[in-house]
Length: 174
Image 1: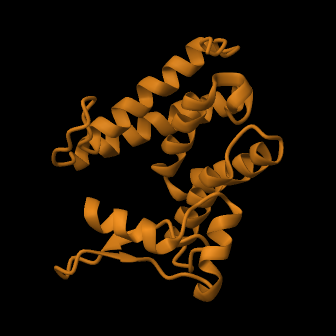
Image 2 (image 1 turned 120 degrees about the vertical axis):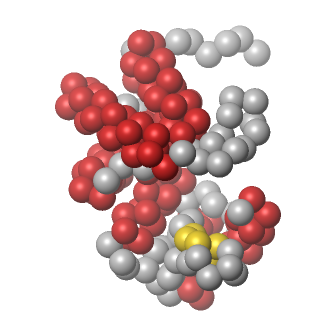
């Protein structure tokens, strides 16, 4: 299979990918896949810098979707938004929703950012993507979910697998 064509904005794609690497490094994920302790101070610095850069990109180009920067860099834009402050996340959520409607972003990314925004507003999430550590020694706990009996159906609508499978991965990872 031939290599995919470079995106129309390769420098922009490269910037987003570098910023995603910095995001993950601050969170303890190394390029070789090993995981070390996160650096909270570095996370705050990287997140603020990345948010400012994504804001500039959005102002100049709109949401950096698949046709502009390629799928991997579009994934990086979503990840940066996931780790931004709530006010920026809410703006990004509207832009991401529009990008999904145009086929420029994934429904999975929209589900994760939707849940992150809801959680940060102290509201129940829709897709069961957000967990938190309550610090009580019992590990990660699923953030409250709206209509839990419909959770797996909503997850399936956006391309996510069953909640039980996702929870097993979360528990094994954390």
